[in-house]
Length: 318
Image (cartoon, rainbow, N blue to C red; front, side, top):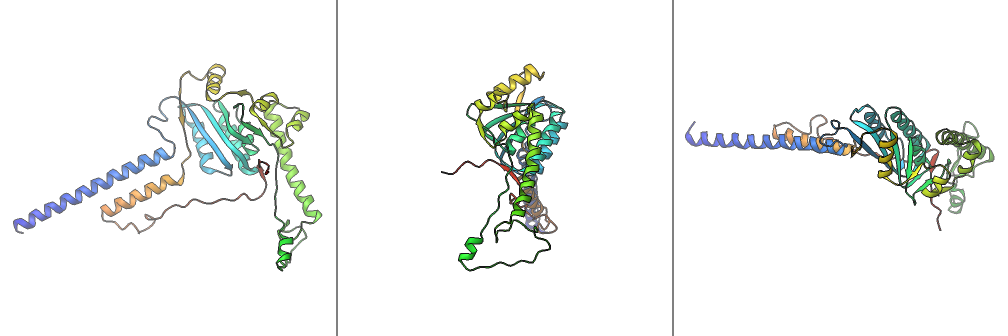
């Protein structure tokens, strides 16, 4: 090989080494970003801390959130947990699973709820699972109840000349149907369904808030209350915010003073998307085909729907 060939070969090696180092650096950066997206912070899990978890929007069965609550229970560095709630509610099963997860966490360490703008229906169900419910003066709490809504489009279909026929194994199969008015038997079935979940919800309220049956009934008519009203009717333990929760944790629950409050978030799919992209870049740099196997696959977020019964506050429309 002549001198020019040796020089060209050395240049090629240097370029290949550069791109390999760049791919490794990109992969390392993606790992750090993924960890940050999942709620990790430098030093998290080492220094004693108070974890803050936010539950917002429509509540459904949220496996990443359940996994986070379980991880906080087992994290010895987490001395207490603040659950920040901004939610109008959601599915009854979603509220139930979060309620039990928070109660399980509270069996291991102090847990308090900070109500932001709204903690209604299933949102309040999660709040009362904690050991201390703190709201702001103008927060909204309550709406204790269960809802089952369905659409009756039979009149509309009749106007446009559409007739939907069905053969059913029994009269109550697939009732209520959007194609026909619900028969009395179907409405009675739904009333039993809603009544059973409502009784269960009220039992939780009575047990967690120390209410008598009469006191439970007084706050379980679906009404919503401000934070001040909630304090008077004992749906709320105190008014304030994070400072009030810190005072309670330090004075009443023996949590060390001055601990940092660290935001902790469930691990979402976006973290894996970043890892997938970095892994594809690295595979190209090292000469692998990123389309092989599952290297190029991108995770897609699922769009959920609120099927079945919900415990959800709906502001009245003008």
